[in-house]
Length: 77
Image (tube, rainbow, N blue to C red; front, side, top):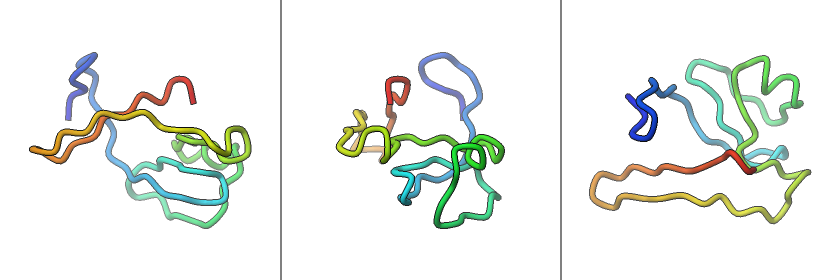
């Protein structure tokens, strides 16, 4: 899928909750309960809402109820 903002190819993955906060991991990565920052980066993931840095952070996102797609800006997380 192409990014509707920049045209770059988007990566498929999943969003999970963990003691790290909310994380995004690419498809085909075995999910475990806790990820160190190094493990996240090594496996291609990111902390979308890092629990230890911002425990009450809010992820701002746009949601299309018609096509059921969500786009979130994670740059300032």
